[in-house]
Image 1 (cartoon, helix red, strand yellow):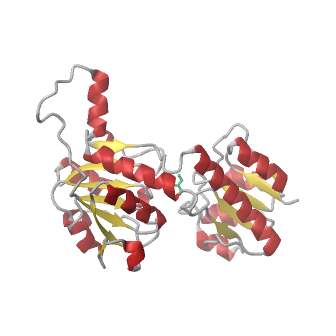
Image 2 (cartoon, protein in one colour; image 1 turned 45 degrees about the vertical axis):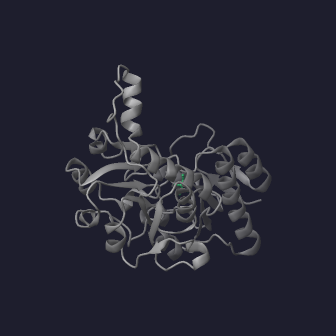
Image 3 (spheres, protein in one colour; image 1 turned 30 degrees about the vertical axis):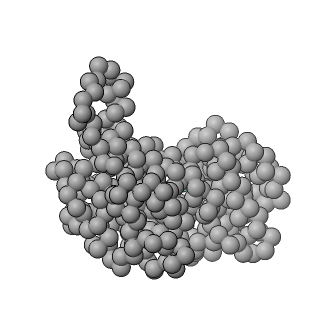
Length: 317
Ligand code: DGY
């Protein structure tokens, strides 16, 4: 049986499956392992089932034992892993696409609703009490008839588009390539981000974090939006230059944000905490029991397939 280091505690059903499939090393206290600890604990292992909290950078990967042949990431995103460094060491990297698209799209919609309808301010007022209803109290942006720009029209983007359309939003998108008409369902394609941002009353960021998308929301691009636009991010914090966005929020160029992901999680830029209109969540995208089990089971299957067949359909490097 292959020996696998599982860096974070999984839901019981998935740990039971792992125990039937491999000889696993579990993390029963769910300790957040340091990089040296991951290197140390992976001695004698054939693979690692990692999570987005494990920073598998070049330095870490270069020190992994030669026996490690696969890093199976328990996430669709894999920005925490240096793919080139892994490839150079002959280590396959896999992810868990599809199974979390619905849950993540739900949070994407929650971010849009929360930011547009001033949920952060509303929750705060309701808790403090003594709020006074009036005709213009906490007036927000109505979704019906509002243009939603989607940056990255993969599975999650398409699901967000579907729900947003049912709420009366008008969908625009930018993607590396234009979708076929049956997938577009009337959404308007924009070849470049300037064109997309200029029609986005609300933006939903759904694209992967790559070298190309890093800091795509920055000092220059924030000016492309209509005044008072709303930016939401369900993908990865690396896509936003926080200082530029916080500055745009303070100037009211951008009216509100809905964020689930951040650079340097869990230490988000404190500037966001000063912004009343910031609707912020602690990376809940895939946080439903069914989804977390499906993700972990897929991460286990990825390792199993790889050792049985020498290949794996969710290989990303
Ligand atoms: C992912 O899988 O990349 C999600 O962000 C996890 O919640």
